Image (cartoon, rainbow, N blue to C red; front, top):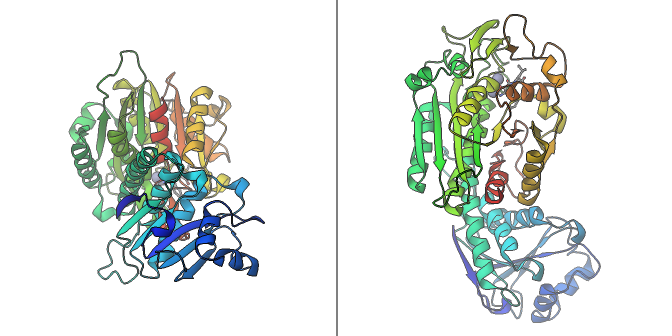
Length: 496
Ligand code: BES
Ligand code: ZN
Ligand code: ZN
């Protein structure tokens, strides 16, 4: 999709469809819309008075051959109540417009920013919304009968604005939107087309393209490093594991500056292992690598945005299979840190591979850690598919991550993790066990297990099991992978 900015006044823009948005309030036709209304000889006021144009969130009003405008058609999208309007809503408005217009075979559109959004943040949100909406999950359909792609999207609305700011915001939106779509493309791949080795190749290709350093650990190096927890999961599969390490080092990195470690769970398929999952819905477990894919997407964006801090992504990748060599419930494994683990349930495998990922990230010099993982079904019970769960061993660092999530417009909610949860993972035979000895609180128990490997390093764990996959399409997004966490992590790195 080509992106550009049109500095002409709205009435002179000759586009197939000019898009703007309307708030739900009594004087709906104000500001930018009042100007359009005037140009069209009062069309918009009449639509509002008739009750057709209400401004209700994501309502579409299509005006054909608007008089006085060079545009062939005008699409007005409801933006809801002005007091609730934010970047997230603007993203949805732009995205919904794109997907709605595609069903009408429109291939070129122009989004007119209103006076409140004629700045970098507004332009960024619109471009992100457009790019995210243009993603579809139908890669393997041999006949794409659905929608034509949007070929070009133009932004407009330059009166009273700095075009430079807007263009800068558009560029940021493009970088971050494309990074999220890169993540979504990986997450959407079925497990036969994205094994740990293939994921490593895709990560490596991205890193080379973006000028990032990359190191892929194969099974031999993983064994030399004594990553026993990761290997215990991998041993049930014929596919060898990989650890993908991607590094961004800024030119002016000061010594003693923080180094951000991004550790992402990449189980390219989770059958549960010997503690096998029920067959119903198991196909979805191809998305059990969404945490790892989010880290690779964040690195792609950071390579272009160039934060001041060093960032290292560590992505342990494996399948979780019940092969003849698979680990069995009750087996004891030694993690890279030296801790012994009683594996009581082979389906609690994400925490095992992250344990070694976290240890390795610390070994590489990371001073701050964030992990993202589709870790537990329990987080879906607690927060549905609305919020990602956030856990920490350091309140200050968690506050930073939550503030980044808010700025990025990704929903995340703090969850408890205190010393008492540790009691639940005490093992009889080993240092710790990988599931709770009690009932309930599964997401906090998973986090408590991870915390055992962080020691004093400030760490935040994001449980994205509920938020990495959309079961039903939305007006602004296709069904399938969401790319959750990429925006928050980029925001965090840019402000660390
Ligand atoms: N990958 C799953 C978690 C998951 C569940 C992700 C649903 C997405 C949707 C994870 O490896 C798992 O199986 N966790 C178990 C842990 C349990 C055995 C303690 C779970 O949540 O049931
Ligand atoms: Zn599992
Ligand atoms: Zn899993």
